[in-house]
Amino acid sequence: MAKFGIAAGLRDTFLAEARKHYLVYDQFYAGQMPAIYASHPRGESRGQNYIERMYTVPTRDGVPITFTRIVNVDRVVTNDDRPSVVLVTCLAGERATFDLSDSDSPALDLADRANWVYIFEPRGSGRNRGEFDPNAFLDTFVSNDLPAVLGFVHNRPKIKKPAVLVGHSRGGDVAKFMIVRAAFKLNQAVDAIGKVTGQGFTTRGKTRTEIAQYLDEIDRDRAGQERSPELDSRLEEARINLELLRGVKALITLGSPMIFDKNYHEIFPLLLMLNHLLPFVGADRVPVEWAKWLAATIPGLIKIVRMLINPRNFDDPDGFLKAFVGRGTTDFSMGEGFQFLKAVYGGRGFKRMGKDQFNYPEHLDLIPPDLPVIDFVGEDDILCAPYNLGFINRAFASPRLDFSHFPQYAHSRRNVARIRLSDDADSIPLPSGSSYVQGYLVEGIGHLDYLFGRRGQVIRRFVERLVERVGTP
Image (cartoon, rainbow, N blue to C red):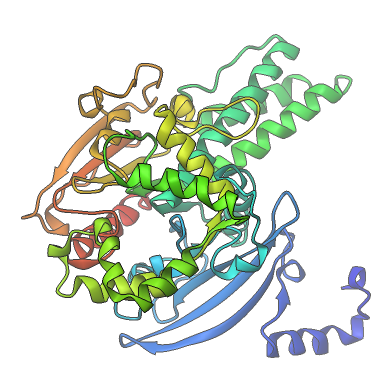
């Protein structure tokens, strides 16, 4: 307490007041990265008691990012070895993507299974709307926002809790691309270490344990020798990125596209026209809030959004869309929209906006093979078409798109299975083994149906089973 200028005799009074106002620095209790949190009971719903806690952590570029933790106080267990679950929201999405209402909440469903559940909204959306950055790209969320959240989630408990990342649409891309970028930076650092020491090593195809053993061996071999600033720097960089990868237990994506065929649907030319028009009128964001007001004023416009669902999955499709659009969507930056449209019209995957033109899907083989990846793609999803399963099995690749420059995942098992209309969540076989990439092609599902409607209920329950499977030692 002394480093904060608080006298020892005032410690108990200070902490009591902090707890009273639900405002505490976690670093008072452990040597962790600094974070502020505010906590409040959600109250009883669905016959259960929940508590929400909002954490705020600094990113590498100094932006405060707030995210939400939801726990079922009747079922949560402290100091267990179950993974946390981090839910990553979609483009223009807010937390309602995973928590639309008490009765329709994937977040509460996962909390009911004793998981520590976190909802992450990147800068510019949801609880981070005040941190809006018109120039923010996916790269911003990949390199800054999600790593800050994941680092805190992984390291905060006494027993580290690596997270199962579950991302819908853009959220799954951000999660997967964060893993790819960390794996790429780790490989670069290890390659430089090999050149300095003469002990060459590649991370490609190696598990996180094998990479850690290599770094430990380098440390042992140089014990007692003169310190090399370059080697020290490279070792530090390697360990930072390895620790980020260790914070991930598994990755589950729901309708997350990595490549586009611009001729697949008429919605893509429409988006391109919008992206050209908005800068012309001086806009710094894609005005989803304005579009929501327009849809509320002219009720018939909500039918345009019907392209994102399969209406047969809902008793009241328009009622659902009004609730989702009203609660779950917001403006997003022009920078992010431009990066998406470059991917759409380039047809070669998502590239970083820097000079190096780093292409995320061209480095999928660097993902450690002991990190399971599970991708869901819907047959009727206009934004994440079935040809995205071509990254797992080339038989699904579109003949109009060139997949030849994309490497295969390094995992020992790569499989695609079909989830049929007749399947229920308990009848779908779970993937097995410790090294796999599993794709699921889901019949009768649109872009929002992974989480909502009758088909969404099946996928949500199956995701809960997947979380339990990857959390089993």
